[in-house]
Length: 424
Image (cartoon, rainbow, N blue to C red; front, side):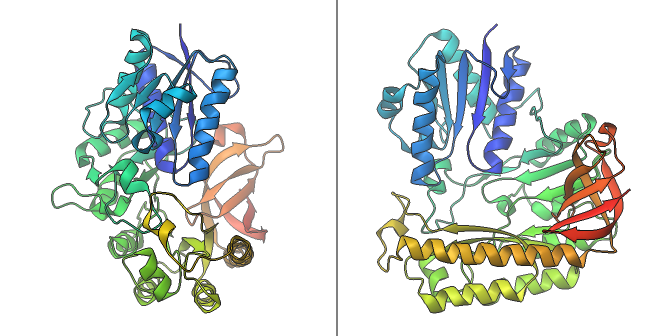
């Protein structure tokens, strides 16, 4: 029996795709192993969002070969932008092209078959007789792929192609199957998830339909691009008894109008403010997240100050801050006004510290409130850990191992370092 390990780099969508690959291989009778277990074959599902990520993928291939892995199958975004000759030269045996699904094999028929199974699992149109195989307490469901927004710093349109959506019946059938397996929470994910469409249906309609599935307790959304479907989604969150988590991850990138134009973002700071204000008016206890890039070309001190003011103005509890990194092949890599790397990093440190203070303040605001946590693990002392609907990390005592994977409701007694704490 061939043993296969899947190593996944990058975003939540990549991890959702890897779970589908795992489900496909198990359905075909292969042994998929985890962790440090030895394997005969490695499937590396790659990310190339930065040049550093691309270099890391190549190092992982070479390392696998040095450690005696007989076959390396490469899938994911690297396969769209790195020439096949270079991939084969570092030790790749099978390439599954991310955009076309074409399989190129530098090995035998058994290797080719694995590549074809991987390609089928990643196809947006293939009909599946299996479910993704997750090892986590929540399941990520891919609803769409691709993007055509063409932000100046982003390579994703080149690696994943144009936007395309899975059909609503296929998605809902997959969610129902996962609920039957015991998953209480699913995350709807994609490259540009709010651009999902099926006929006249949008993402808010899909979330509302998914909420009717028996056994499913919560639906969470991945990042929602400004100017897409944020208000409709907030309206669904605000409905009585809604199962849509009270979390909106709403990428900001910069609070300065000029920097946003140079980034080729499709909104202004005023549009962003209006959407956040609307969301908070409809869901007052909203967990608000954002991505922010510091030191983009042209970001001077005044522009950075606008970003700081934007973040200070709203109750963000989940900031993802990144110093700008040049990505060859993107328009931003050719822009003037380059910000020194040490300035990018210092600004990032400032925002990370601000984000930590905002997270702590938001957690403190929940003291005395009733919250629900999806329990991910329970230690020997009976303390469970997981995340609330608002995406706040939680500790709740008085649990046992049987509570893992369950939703537990409790009153928040205290908040420490951005975590809420209580006892069932």
